[in-house]
Length: 331
Image 1 (cartoon, helix red, strand yellow):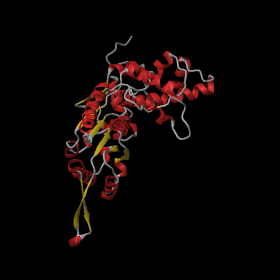
Image 2: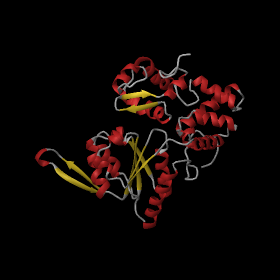
Image 3: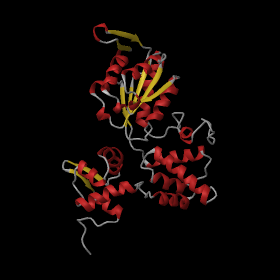
Image 4: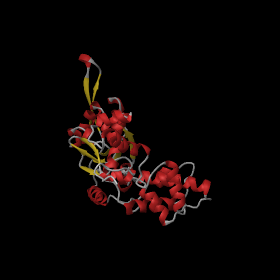
């Protein structure tokens, strides 16, 4: 990838996406195991096994799919679970695949059961079974498919059916990134954007990135905007900190709604435990957002825990919010 500012044909997000294995920072165990699978497939001259990537949003699942495609020298066709509503939608995608193509399905947990049943024989035997006609005149039509690799990405692997999960040759869980890796990602992205960012500013941006590359790049873009408007393009610690303050993001990367989750548990439910449905109602939010968006990161930084009785904030949450924990002595 050429390290230059994006043109009209290239969005900032696409130009920041790593295009080589060396550019893809972090997830070392996943990369190592994945490259063995790819090298073996290339050595045998076969299509790669079907792959499942799962983990929180923004950790690099789509980027990995693109790197697999580039490594294999294959075309990649991209769709998503919600886009495949009917059997005909899935049939159209499968019949347009060519030999050794990569089919990437994002949000795979939102595939309906009918679509899953079409995928089973396609993944296992490279067959597409269609029912033509209705009633007594209906007949089964079988279409042979070329060798292809299905890569599915999901943030909710538990919602995938057992039969679908079992048909993937390998599954990889992407974890939150370590601080040095996030700093390396911010440094690389700044270089791609021709942005001069000092080490302290990189540390501040990385610290507020929720251990997630997508968030790190988003914050870097906002810092660049602030620098262009207020400091003639100079990105230092002050610029980074003022940008975060403007966005109401604290040093741990918590946004207003994240802090509100903690505050509601503390002030309305005495720190917990409280059930997910009750907490979602108190937040005037849906349970899905609570469980998929807010809780994973709050738990990863040790501010929230799930117990058999419900959600409970930790002493660290009181400290972070500047509140007195029930166990603290009154001075």
